[in-house]
Structure formats: structure tokens, C-alpha cells
Image (cartoon, rainbow, N blue to C red):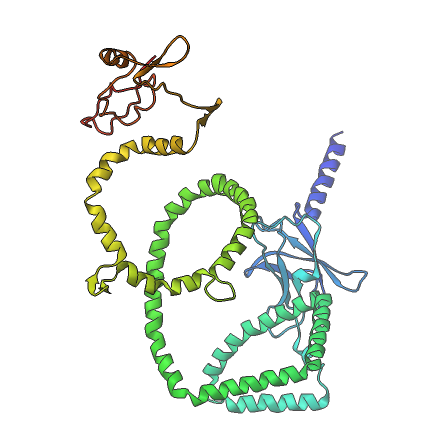
Length: 453
């Protein structure tokens, strides 16, 4: 039993040793894996974090490189990670390594055994591959160009090296551009097709295009002929821009002051302006005929038939109404100043009669009509007229003796009622709101009300 336990423990130790104690692997697909061999390093920012475990070929002819990331904290990789084949030096064979540019922290994890597609990988390009694309004539031309550049920068090597450092970002950007175009081949083809259609449509309208070019030439000629004026305008432009800047600064302060107003107005706009606009919509629709009539009232064909022509005649009316002119052999004021002077003496009387306006209007109404209307319908007032006659048994008129007339009249009428208050024509309301006293010291007798119950 002891021997069996030792054998099992030895097997387990061998398995763990051969498996490397775990780890994390990912498959990276490259267009080319030239000079990549098993055991090449996998680096992140120059630090070795793993190695290449295997190099295989996919069914579609791509290189499948199995990367093993063994350094803690660098796996699992995230989506957005890019794998690039780089050269450790310019000399040597199979001196490549895989450089990982880690994806962002918000990217999803690439699972163990997952895959990075060719859109996330970038192979190395050998100079021999570049030169092999040239024919003998092109190679000779390139050689001459290199020799020319060598002679041209002789003595200025430092400046040339500085220029080459700036060239690298441009080449990298161009590489990414062409890589994106390669991935979006269908979109690029569609762009070319649409561009061809555009050029065809433009060529079909070459006459209009020629006219446009001629007009632009005319415009340019006009600008050059007025060069001095244009120069003056350009010279004034800085002052205009400075003033505009000051205006915009002040405007910003004004907008800051308006912010509380806008915030306070938002609830009103949401809760009240919307329903108001809904109610105004039918009003605007119904107002269209009135607006059309108003438009024809303001202006219409013909003479002396609209408001515009009426306003044109206002100077003559103004002269008669306001200006002092010689009229009937004497300087006389206009109609309005003369009316104002005439009414100046009537102010006390008008002020006294103003509270009695309801009685005055009622008098005119009863004088011209019989009865009135209220909520219960039509009604009329009737009064008993007493005089110096009475009726005999046969309904004949008999004069009342003079000594009895005063007693007869005093039984049904009241005299000397010449100081009524406003509203005393009606019987006193339960709330004593009438008769009405315009002021506490108004000189009227509130007891002078209609007789009877």
C-alpha cells in the first residue's frame, strides 16, 4: 500500500511539472508568422510575461500562434488587445517576439483558449519582402535614390535622424489607415462606386460647372481690383473681433443671469404653455378670416379705401385737431385744445354727477323703452300719480276741496326729496350696499329711498 501511494504521488508531481503549474493561453491569428518559432518571448511594454507555445496553420491559410501568458496580473487579456510581431534586433534569424498592447479596462475578458483575430494582430514586414516587390529597373532607381539621400544629408545626419523620428508616426498612421481600408473593403468599394457616379453626374453638367468656374474667376478679379478696400477691411477686422469678444463675454454673463429665469420658467412652460398653445390652435384657425379681413382693411387696391391711406391723411387731421391757425380771420387753437378748455370748467359738475351715472342711464332706458329684463324675465315698474281730483260713486272726476288737498297728498307722497344718494332708485339691499356713498363725507341723504314696503 505504501508503494502504491508513492507511485500515485510521483505521477501527480510529474503531471504538475509537465503542465507548468497552470497558466493562460490565447490563440492569435496572423497573416504571416515569418521567423516566429516556439519559445519566442511574449512581452508587454518590454517586460517578458510569457512565450510562444506553438505555431500552426489555420484552414484558411493564416498563422495560428498560441501565446502563453504566465505572469500574474497580465491575464486574462481583454478585448481591444493588439498583438504585434517585432524584431529584437536587425541581425540574426528568428529573433522575433510578440508585443502585446493591452486593451482597456472596460473591455470584456478574452477567455482561456480564446482567439485574437487578424484585425487585432500585426505581422512584421521584412525589408527583403519590400525589395522583392521591385523589378531590376526599380531596384536601380531605389539604389540611386538612397545614394542621393546619403550625399544630400552628408554633414547633417543629426537633422536627418530627427526628421526620421517624425516620419515613424506618419508611417504608423498610414499603416492603420490602410489596415482599416483592408478590413472595410466592401465599404471602400461602395465609396469608389458612389464617387464614380458623382463624377459622372458632374461631367454631365460640365456647362454649369464651367459657368461656376467663370463666376469664381469674375469674383476673384473683382476682389483683386478692390485690393485697397479689402486691405482696409482686413485692417479693421482685429478691432471688430476684439469688440465681438467683449460682446460675447458680456453675453455670457447675461446668460448666467438668465439661467434662474429659465429654470423657473421650465415648470410653467411644461404645465401651462402646452395647454395654452393647444387652446390657441383652434383660436388661430378661427382667426384666419378675421386676419384676412384685417389685411384687406389695412391695404387694398383702389383709392381712399384702407388704413394706409387714412394714415397718410392724418397730417391734415392733426392740423385741424391740434394746431393753432388763422381761422375766420383770427388765430384760433385746434379742436382738441379748444374742447379741453371748454371742459375744464365742467370738471366739478362731471365729478359730482359721475356716481349718478346708473340713474342717468336708467332714466334714458326707461324713457325710451317700457320695462326691463332680469333673471326672471320681463318686468316693468308702475307708479301711482296723485293729483287734485278724486272719483265719485259713478266714476266721475270730482275736484278735491282745497282744504283737503294737502292732507290727501301727504298720505301717499313724500316731498323735498332732492338729496338722494347714488343707487337710491332701487330699494335698499339686505347687505346695505345701496344707496352708495362714493366717499364717507359725500353730501347725500341715505334715508331718501323709495316709499312703501
